[in-house]
Image (cartoon, rainbow, N blue to C red; front, side, top):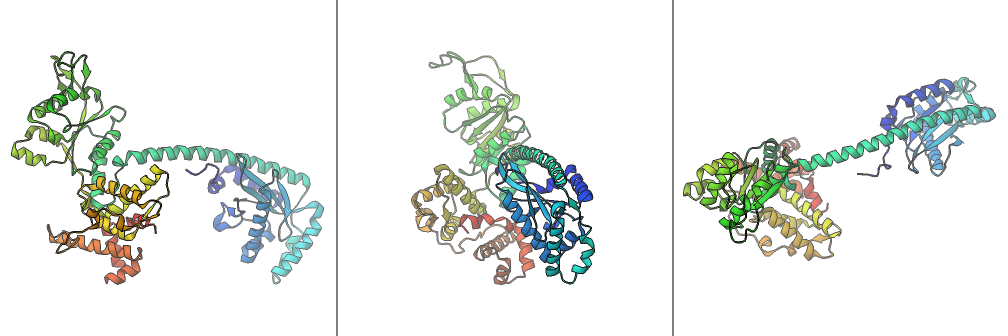
Length: 528
């Protein structure tokens, strides 16, 4: 968030009743106009930068003229600049001869602008100011000077005492403005904290993606995260299944309770049973005291069973009992224990085929697969690669406290062409490797890529999907051609449309269809 003293919301100040009331008072009493100026002296909080409707007829005429308005702007800037170092209000004279009063606005000692009052004459120097004004009008507006003469003698004058009174009134306004500014700053900080909380809430496992498969995934997660239903997350290794499980827990009503993880493929049956269900003292040689299992630790929370497809038939029976009844018996124990645990499971195996092969219990499969969540592999969402590259470059720069590197166009194109059997994890490792090898270079060249990424298999139709429905394949080709052309033409739709042989309107419609306007990250990734 920006420094709380770095921004003034002048539009909010204009809505303050005390500001509107003060303008009415000084306008009616002395025909004086009040405006806010920022640190550079520019008028703020007024339509099109114009002065607040001048009650002084001569000022109204001057500010309606472009040249006159520029002169007024110059005076406001000069007076504001002169007040930036001043601790008290400053009096002066404008380009036309009117008196001015500039009262600095400071927050925590920092100069933030001023309240600028002008359009009045001082009693002690009124006649001299009128002569100055007549000369100015004659030089600037020779055709209108005579008509304005009738208003000059009726111009308002103020005594020093009245100027002091005006200063006191403006001080009241400044106090109100600063109070509002502090309130807005505190509200902004609370809003930013809430925004960050919401951002983290809907950032599913820090996953990045704007491709159609990922959008569908995020929408599904948003619908099921509040549910207590068992969810089976499937997908290849490296796609981020554990991250999704974490996001599902921390977006659920159980988020204040424990989130417990167990990789079912990492332990043999005996150790896994003890780890999940706990054991009592004396259950086996090393069981010197009672130990709670992960199910008890996750009570009222969430238990994530990773690699559920690696469990044995015997363990599957025990897991089925917990899912059906919420009860289990610790190893070596005799009494049942009951828990309230939400189960999330994940696997990279085809459980449906395992059921057909008899290696996974059908009843457990249906208990786990209440809500199936499939994470797409990276090769099916290659348009997300620039976004992921972007993120990993940012992460590496933050972790090493080094300048952020950029990716050459050739390097990024090769990354997009690779099939990524290791998915997002493989891409992350590759980016980290590239950053290390690049050393002090700011741009990463394609020659640094791993051999497996740099080399490309010869294909009859390279880069194209040649299986599935013809309509889907054609749309995929169409999308890729449009996307590649937009990248080459730096997202200039007029040039891209001409190259593709379609109208610009037709290209815009296709961009909307394929959601291609959301890929500015590509340009950022290559440092453009």
